Length: 224
Length: 275
Image (cartoon, each protein chain N blue to C red):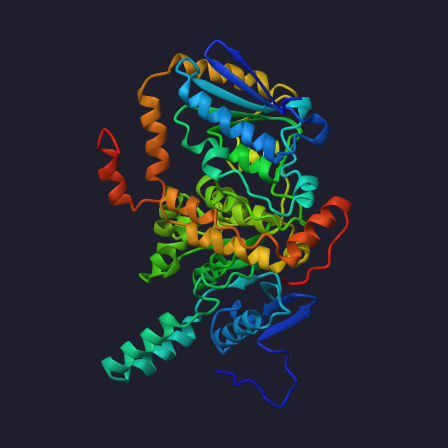
């Protein structure tokens, strides 16, 4: 059984984490499939926007702890392949149910997040001594420093509404509606698709954390 | 000036209590709104070193006695005296004094190089230097009646951390508003702006801070500190470089990594080895 289900709707690629019996835990096979999917998405011209969601109203509980425990020689999929940060097209996460640990980091690495009522977010498992892949870097750039430290130190679990308050999700939808709303937003974005979007997304990321005067002078250039 | 009576067993100016791995430091100068003077500043610095250097201590909580003030900042009465003393010294001595005050690591230097968590339980007025001290902590719980503010601008004085840490905590325009108006900020608004993490009812901030501290203590300390280090070292660094640094995993074969996995599988709490 493929652990990733893919379908296209018009110019939209819908990617679904599909290990419902394991809470869509991100085992190595699934991480590799995701990395490959992002690359194919980038290279397929008529796919303009991607929506990432989880099967059975669960986004992802994070690492596959059983697999980590079985396999001492874990070699993680490189972050720049696993997370769609370097993909030039928009990726929207549609989140229902638990979104924890590595699953939370994956959602953070998407460009927009839509969350159904009842979705739960956090870096959670206080037992796990598995280092974060990008949360410590991305969170303080996305929300308040104090909120970031709260999530990182105290393992705070946030509801969809609290995530909205922290400006980490764009919209809270009715329970079970996140995927449909995300798809509608994706259609809307696909309509406005232009070659400038790749430039804009890359601009945002590459200028993040630059000293302001340097960022301003680089941003004026057509290409960086 | 009333001289403190050394013979009476008066409560110390900073009341310290240890609970498991938690150091609670309560500023006890309520008659001066816990302003930094009369030895409080030195006592806070000592407590900070005690916390930093004791491996048994994992989390520090900073709060004030009473419900009136967390800390009203520098005690101007004291600093006026200090200014007069310094005024009598040579310009060179003044420079030396400033220089040594600036580089000394302490609770007043934003805890940038101390990766153990510090929580401020803001139990009342939290102003000027007191507000800077709270902003230098990692988490802030504010009581519903408490106010935070940087009124220095109204007195023509400067506030050191306001030019950097403030802008990491809140957004640029909000930071400028706080800095330029000098007006006190009510608890709810402080949370909205990112200055505080959450509001607690009057009298409850210390209890709530302890809850969070105990939650943090359940985690392996190496992990907590590693992640604060990662956060602080990636602030203000170009994203691509910060992400590349993030991929330098600490050892995966550590004893605590293995114990954590086993505990996660069995859903029980592990005992950490510290390795």
